[in-house]
Length: 315
Image (cartoon, rainbow, N blue to C red; front, side, top):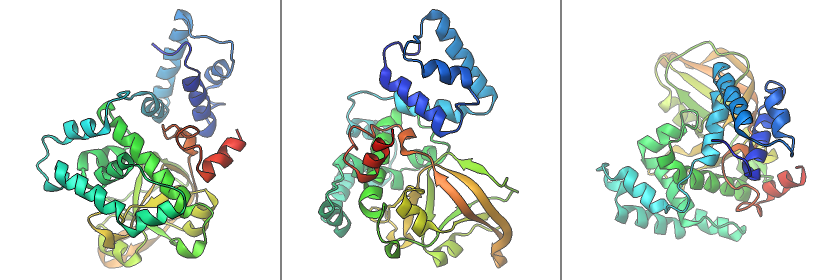
């Protein structure tokens, strides 16, 4: 069943269609949702289901995935319970309860965390924990990097991860001096293919700001995405990303995570590392999807963040 009274969900789906430029593609669906008097009775529910089928047939399944990320939760299920159940068969030492709690306390004492607090932003323990899980749990990280296809069993971790990244972005990146931001970000890809001039990356993107590190990471016969102009794009709110080296077991990699984005212009005529035959894809024009689409309570729990206030004023 779809919704009858859930106004929040209806408004989210409207924003989803608008922000992905699909309001014209699915005109009937958008117009019905945008009509306050339109209700989902039995007959209209069939219309909704048919529209979902159409979305799948058009290879726009990511729209339904965004909707699933927004709606599929375990309610008040504690994050700790979710992580414990999802990692109970994992024998990696760094995922034990003791090790995780030690890591959270280590973050509390770190310069990174104290700098955040000075700027009026404090990461909750759940947000620290979720970002840590992203850096050490292969299953969760893999799901995040495959079109945000997050099963319900990981939804709380997903929710707190995105919240943590958005908080860090607001406190340390948005409208800050470009001198402190990376000029480029590098993302390695296994394999090579001819890319279209415009495409979408519907997942988190793990990058490094270190060019020498990127050359070491460059896969043989692979591809290296090079995001150009990142200083300006980060500061202006066109690229939503945050460093995660503060919690990584490998801080020397200077790792960042970018949230899903659209690519508008690339140059794929050069080689990144010649002796590895690693192709370079220089990304020169791009923009992150609106933060309204990430499945978190943006205007509620995160309503005090600067960039969220500015988004709210434009609604």
